[in-house]
Amino acid sequence: MTAPVQSPEQAGRVLRALYAGYGYQPFRVQKFERYELYSEFRRFLATEKVLTFTNTDGRLMAMKPDVTLSIVQTPQPEGLRKVFYHENVYREQRPGEGFREIPQTGLECIGALDGYAVGEVVMLAAKSLAAIRDSWVLDVSHLGVVMGVLDEEDLTEEKRAAALAAVAAKNVPALRQLGLGGAAKALAGLTALYGPLSETLGQAEALPLPGRSREALGELRALAEQIALYDLPNVHLDFSVVNDVAYYDDIVFRGFVEGAPSAVLSGGRYDKLLQRMGKTGGALGFAVYLDRLEDARAPRPACDGDLLVCYAAAEDIPLAVQTAEAARARGETVRVQAQPPKTLRYRRVLRVQKGAVTEC
Image (cartoon, rainbow, N blue to C red):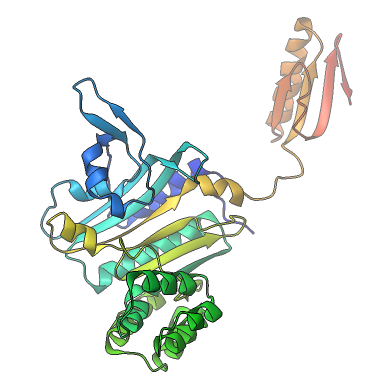
């Protein structure tokens, strides 16, 4: 049995209700932003290209490619800020394909983050996937585990980037060819692990890892204990989840649902962005890419409705209406029109012509 959510529009409504139920407040942003915002914080964007135009006052404006920057730049109240959004962003989805309007629903938790807040955001990411499809998985990691291993070696930025790419691809031969010293063996051991969060975390804790990595494992253990309270069986540990290290710096995660060829949810902790904006505290959030849900829809049903009623001429409309209303009174779904649609299928088709109703 599949989850009832079938379309991006339905998913957006269900997800917003989910987040509101946990005390998150709706946040609306402007469609346009000052281009300087994205120029200054370009390294934190998921895209290199920004769609711009000149405003009537001569200022360079941008169609927003990102929602998080717009939220973080607004004044931060004391304590913990919990918001959710449903917005369109404008990005080049793939190089050379041009800009697209992409619907997103997501949430951000900003400020005095504690262990509970982190666990709640990860839990809501998992529940978001479960609301979309029954068959789902959320892969969780902590960048501190992998980065702690790499920090033990004197690596160039180029070699560090190559190592992260090999970890992301679970390419152990490539790791061994990079000349990483003892780090290669540790990273190979981490990339080989995959499975339920708590159980697989125990295997990671048994590996010989440096201090920073063990500190990150401790944070993952606290997260695993909280996630266990929610009875979410499809939260897995996967150290190949190395979301953009220029943006994220702690817990990271990606979500998948049956039928979608790529991740439909991505998120993590991004304290670096707050620090760059001169703000204090922590920040954690995720986005659900609603456009990718089109590929995850349930298989088309055998029929699009119970009954199709077709009429031959205007004088046949009263009998067509009478026939359709009688069928609806019996609980059937009925479509009425002059010619049968070419792309829809019905269990029965009736033809109304010259005062008679015949079955086709």
